[in-house]
Image (cartoon, rainbow, N blue to C red):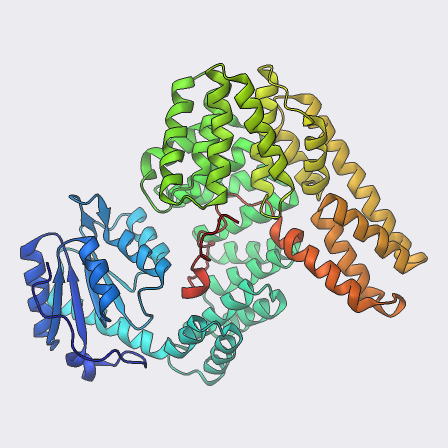
Length: 566
């Protein structure tokens, strides 16, 4: 129950005030320990706050935050009676849009392990304080966060009201004028540009930041923009420069691993991801990424060791990726360990109950359910479910990760005597769609290695697509550009191959003046790019929704769209 009056001050529309306004602010203290709550409330009143409310439980705190606006929330991290945490409350509030940007959220914890700090960063907490602490340090943290929020309020407000272009313009102006928090403002602007896929502009802004104030994250931002913009070799050069200057910068090894995966330098990618793990041995996100890549590169024993360790360390962490459970279940099935398959399926089902409209989790549950049904002898049901998974593989949200999982599943169950209808056609379709380069063809073939006939078909599909696309591109330069564009568009439409989609777009841009009805073509290809273009079909390791290495949260731009099952 709240033990102090709820705030009567009207909700302000502008940014939070500075220290002179702190006494007008309203605060909420959330902690399961009554003595700690009273102490915190007393400390806040000593700072000048006259309106301090208290809540002993997460659910109660959520109700208070739904009903009233607070300037400051000080929340403990551990609520063992409820089985929750302060970070989970923060995540829920941000997802629901219930926490205004102006509100400072301070998390109190008893430990400062790597995982705790990483989770706080992932939650975008405003300040993180380890007990024991002094009242002075709490005051300083609150004031620093309020000043930072006040300086960046207009930019975040533009994001809240779905005006990202205005947010970028304000970031650039603040950067040019070297106004308050100019460095962080510029970083926000560059991240927004990346999110908008304005890669050249993002790269230039990160370069300008690096020239003005050489920070490792700025040069890493240059490399991220180059990689996402389709220039992995440039990104690799940039990262080599960064790592030479900052050899202990783990985020740089993460991104270099992504670059080298895309280029097909799989052993080098594994080596660099391992360096990142060595630098931060408690970082479960990095162990997961290394384990996932090792699995699909064929080093299944090492993968299993890494993924099991990730599960042991962080199953209940917000940094944990459920893809680990899928790969561990596939591995357990391969090693004839039915109890392990059932255990991982149970955990996946529990997660799906918590977020029932997550299509990625639904695919995970369906994939492992096929294994469970088969090992229980329900062959017909297993066949039906596997066939349904194959039918869904043509959708826009079916990505490279989904393709690798499905190919591994099909190859394992085929080896156990389960033949899915039209399996050869499905494998060929996946190869034609996702084998955009030789490297990606090799990765797909490795995923299907348990059934060599599938692997051979995948490599053949990749060769076929390269020949089709290259022939059409050459034809555009030497003959009828419109006919070549028609061929490429038809290929892209039939196969959903990202390389074909992007090649059609490039041909249109290069030979626009020689192609009738160019505007109509532009609209048709743009629709394909939105669903199947390169940006949607990168070889991702893990959940794309987690904060990228070196990235920052963008408030409402990070908030998931309302779940609708699509």
